[in-house]
Amino acid sequence: AAEELLRYAFEELDCRMAHCSHFEWNGQSRRVIEKLGFAPAGVHDTVDSLGRTQKMLCYTMPRAVWARRRQA
Image (cartoon, rainbow, N blue to C red; front, side):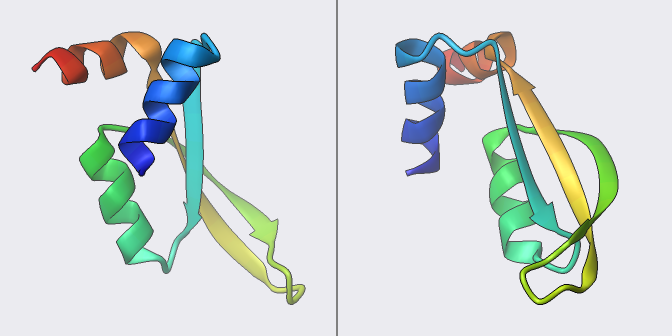
């Protein structure tokens, strides 16, 4: 599903860059994001739905990186 979402973003919507993030404690999301080929872009604090401050890890993927990975 995540691969299809990236394909749609880059091919159908003509996006130049994809961004995603996850809470620091969410290792499963981290593994999916890294497997897709996203690169770390930074960390910031955010407030979750319960009002707690959480670390959010952010990632990016330029269209060119996605295209190279898709051809491989």
